[in-house]
Image 1 (cartoon, rainbow, N blue to C red):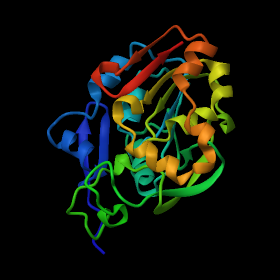
Image 2 (image 1 turned 120 degrees about the vertical axis):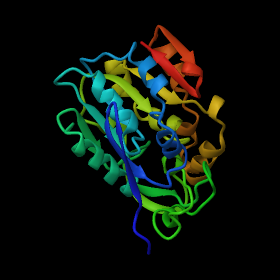
Image 3 (image 1 turned 90 degrees about the horizontal axis):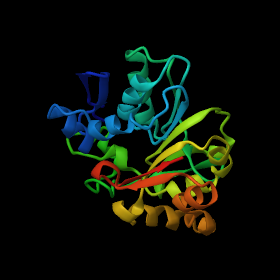
Image 4 (image 1 turned 45 degrees about the horizontal axis):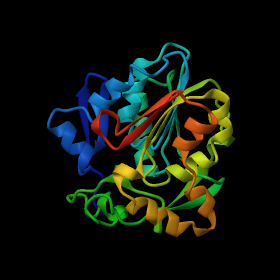
Length: 257
């Protein structure tokens, strides 16, 4: 077994460590660009710095570090990353930047039930490799570690629900969950109705449904949850003020209370 190859970049938001064969994110940092920085900075116009943030799908914390720079003292980011190897990087990035007072990492996924399930074994959102091998035996080959969905035959991970979280004063939810967004928000209605947070989520209307289809295939018993429409819930039931599809030219939708 080959050792994990980790590379660290010194950025304007702190040190960022990630796997050397990380496909999309790694390429951006190696070319001298902070991943998704224009979109994150555009979001700053909407984020309330005095409220807490929930980030679902944190990867190694590249967005998390930027969000930390937005927040006032006393506000926190609760960031959820289910994959164990990525969570280790996330935890390391929090510690090496001395951000324990702002960032609270959780080694869990967020979904529509409490329990455990599997990640997908294959990197279908990247190069099609077997994820477990790309960490070591095949670490000379690229992998989109950030794009692994819930699915079949991968690592077992712990899951929780938005409505189970003991987090108050939530001002913003960032949900990048590789096809699981509908399921997640279906069990977050109470929290969202209580705090009316700003919400950014990856929208399959613009992203495509291939990861969503994998999640649906894994959980056929949750058909109602798979069809939950967070935009409709916020705009029609909660009377949010507006929304922006393809926010900043991307694949996300921003819901504005």
